[in-house]
Image 1 (tube, rainbow, N blue to C red):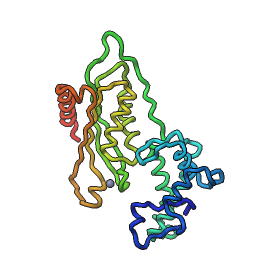
Image 2: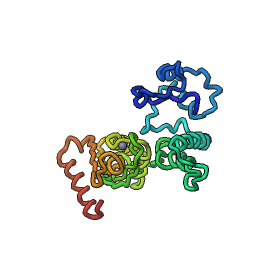
Image 3: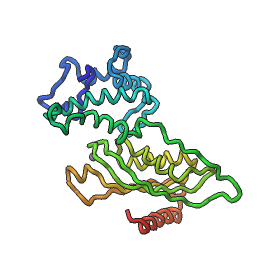
Image 4: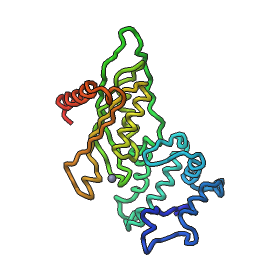
Amino acid sequence: MTKDFIPDPIIHLDSPNKFIPHAHQSPIVKAAEMMSDKGYKDEKYLGNYLRAKMKRDGKRFWAGDNISEYVNDHNIEQLIDEATEAFELVLDRLLIDRETDPNSKGTARRLAKMYFNEIMEGRYEPAPDATAFPNDSADRYEGMLVVRSELRSMCSHHHQPVSGVAYIGIIAAQKLIGLSKYTRIAQWCARRGTLQEELCNDIAREISRATDSENVAVYVQAVHGCCENRGIMAHSSLTQTTVLKGAFNTDQSTKKEFFDNIKLQQEFAPR
Ligand SMILES: [Zn+2]
């Protein structure tokens, strides 16, 4: 374990038999110390160095935040190596024999790569390049556009899969982006640790940014592994969230047209 291991206070503080690696230091003191530069020049873990740097910069790095300014192609391999080491420890603590069980050999590295390169990729990658095309000629498109995007995400509470679909609506503004870009942006937002409510907001904000349109609507419906595979084990649960901005929020006929479009899409190709 690294010397900067901080027990999760939610889990550890109330536990009577809690394990404190440095009994003379509370987690809060440790966290405060990490705000300073002390020791970080010699920090052997790049992950610790980057966390300290983000704290210094006041950069939030929650599970749903993009931190691509701090992570790049040159250092991602080192971060994967460090996460592999940490996952090895998790497997050891779970009492899984990763030395002789052929299926558990290499699992730590598979997990580390999967987190960085797949299920949390949207945290480490910059926004997809969404080239905009001008929509300002005399016969410009002024109607509504509704795009359906498949989503794969992960809940930040349990790291369980979230799978569903987003319907993204905009009223075209001065520029248009390629149709596939709506889905790329939505998937970039989704491939992080998220809550569906946050994800819906994130997609609306990023689509608005890429298109310059203030009139944006996002409807997401998804099934959540944390409701299906654990807890209430609800196999048919479905969660729906809606974010309506601009005319979608203020104009009833625009809102109706959006939801009518969703129904038409669902009839055409059920989801
Ligand atoms: Zn969950």
